[in-house]
Amino acid sequence: EAGVTQFPSHSVIEKGQTVTLRCDPISGHDNLYWYRRVMGKEIKFLLHFVKESKQDESGMPNNRFLAERTGGTYSTLKVQPAELEDSGVYFCASSQELRRRYGYTFGSGTRLTVV
Amino acid sequence: AQSVTQPDIHITVSEGASLELRCNYSYGATPYLFWYVQSPGQGLQLLLKYFSGDTLVQGIKGFEAEFKRSQSSFNLRKPSVHWSDAAEYFCAVGSFVGAQKLVFGQGTRLTINP
Image (cartoon, rainbow over all chains, first blue to last red; front, side, top):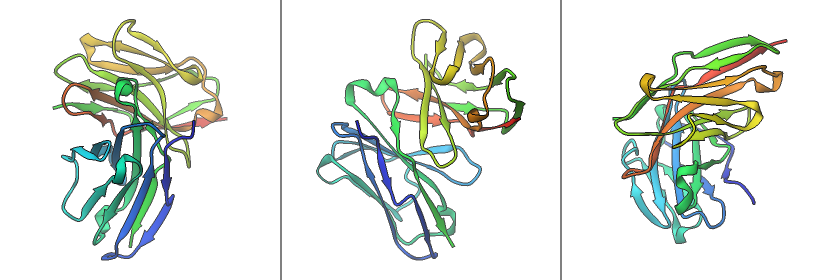
C-alpha cells in the first residue's frame, strides 16, 4: 500500500507569510495526526482527526495554525502568519481505527524554515 | 502526565559493536511503548512496539527492546550494529484510552564509526 505522503518536503518562507502543508494518509485510515519537531526538541503532538472531525487539538500552539481535513481524506495545516519559532519538521501520521494500538505510519515530514 | 526521557542525546559506537539506547517513561497505567527510527531524509519508521505479553519484543532490522515495569524503562538493543543503523532513534509512549497521541522523547542520534 502507498504510505503517508506529505508535501512539500521543504519550504522556506519569510516571516509573516502564509504556508500550507498537505498530508495524504494511507487510503482507508480514518485517524490522521499532525506532529511537529522544532529544532533540538522532542516531537510533539499537534492534533488528531477522526475522519473529518477534530478529535483532539490540544497541541496546536496558537490560532495562527489551522488544520482541516475535507471529506475525511487529505489534510492541510496552514500557518498564517508564520513566525520564526514555527520552523521545524512537521510530521503527519495515520492509522486505522481498530489498529491504533499497533502504531502509526508516519510520513517523511515537511521541513519548514521561516526566515 | 506522560513523559519520556532519552538520557543520551548522541551516541557513537563502532561498527560491529553492541548497542543499547536508553528510554525511561512516566505514565500512570500500563503504557503502549514504541521505538521509531528516522534515517536521514526519511520519515519515522516503526522499529518495534510493546503493549502486553512478553516483555522482550523483537523488531525489524535486528533490534529488540525490553520492557521493565519496575524501572519504567524500555531500552533498545542490538547485538552488532551496521553502518546503515546510523540514524536518530525516538522512544514514545502512547495512551489509547482517552486522548490518542504519542509522547516522544528527545531522540538519540547514533553515529557509527567504521
